[in-house]
Length: 191
Image (tube, rainbow, N blue to C red):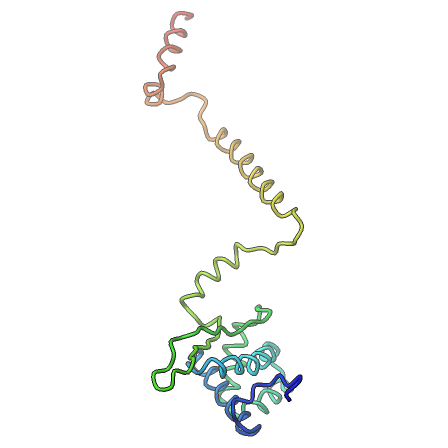
């Protein structure tokens, strides 16, 4: 029975599994995106995300802890350099798994795992949406704040438009409005 045994063994011994995860993590850090089986990708996410979290704080202790997992100096340099800077403001969820078509030979479920901040396709949209998006609570006060903001925006827009309007309308606008000739005629008769 495997009650409470949550680790995915991947059909390997502990030492083989440790070496596999270390190699996959190093390749993910180096290339920012790798294609592997779905089960390995899910296991790799659990393995590499705590290491990326440690890379936010560049200290000797964190470097040594991550090195004990990866055993690759170049991966450590990349992780604490470019990757650590890019994920500094992200509170988690550094990787994305995208399912692909089954492998031709054995029909194994394939997936692409990538670092979220290094994808140019989704990166542009996420930056724009992150700037627009604000935190919302479960309370209904969020909708009221949006309505108040819209009312404030229209209230400030009207005085600006009135301030820009000249006191006398130009001759071209008088000819286009139907009331303008009648008003001009009334002004001429009173004068």
